Length: 245
Length: 257
Image 1 (spheres, rainbow over the protein chains, first blue to last red):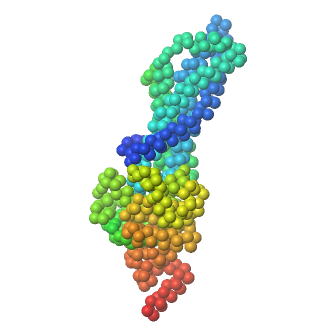
Image 2: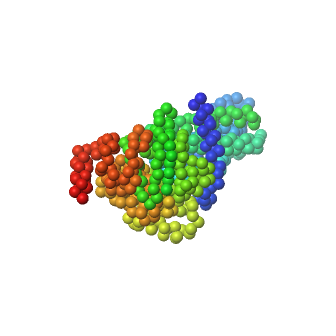
């Protein structure tokens, strides 16, 4: 029963976001601010994770290919496909659920507890449109960009490790990358990225916006929002894979 | 003028407001007083629409607020200013940006025009020079004054203050009270203040509504309170021996006159 109530409140919140902005200029400013917060703010962590993700994939693929009959260029294919199809969209979005999601939940939770949301309501501002919509829109714009960047960095990480360890030359790695490449996989990854970016912002926004109590509840809701976001991402990952592949 | 009739509000099984009716007068400081948990804040939140009453009607200048749709309420809310108990300033904005925010949102004035208005209201609340400070860098009393400045920047017809003196020293409390009182007179606003500060009651109480257990127990003004024989009200207002002595003294003075 509680789950149905929460689901209903979540959809009502989403519906409530769609109203005419009081002053579009201010909403645009807020959107750009969120783009910088979510996009630029997560750039460092995304870059580090992506490079290591690709490097580890390459090392593990090299370790597992023991049959001399199998060409080593397959390492590049393994790195490419795992990074594009799974690691970059899913793993990066799970990390962003922690980085961006917890920030959104605690920011909105703090605004709720300190009556800042009430103050905006009293002024006649639709707080769902002003506070939540720019965050979701900014995430939908910036997170897929981060995912694309992550793909390049992940593949580059694998290339660097393979060549440094001597498992595969740079030329062989590049040849492997071109072999059997399916452009649809990138499209599939982007569809996942768009879906996940909506999840990593809307769920924490729901938990933050509906905080009741004090600082303890802000922390509790922030943690809960990250856990729920991760579970929903994995569930959506499975559904998208089953439907689109 | 704000009139409310038979306001009833329940949270689960708990009846917080039970058929409260009263008229908040224009150009006067209207006080809602009562012990903690008596329903003051809930009543005020019902009046501004943050809570929906289960029963009853709220009328702003002859127009039913209860029957207004979202858009009509939005328009009315631009005539409402509110000072929150914790000031509710936006942490990430400077004092100037906090005060300018309603102007940015609802006017199309140029920056310099808005800045002029911000400086006017900051001067009105004696806060000139604090423009570039963040809420974390100013004192509790200053935060309240910034809250008042933000509440009055759009020249509201209705000003709500939720416990404006909480957490302030007596001297600053008196300054805040006087400021609210002067603004009410100056701009002819309908000011509604939630308080359990006895100084406020005695100094600026033009029209007082005393709530007890969610019900209207007594109404009057600061002069009537001295002569009130309502036991609950007397126990609440003149709780300490010092205040009882003060009441006796005031009664003697009044009898002499």
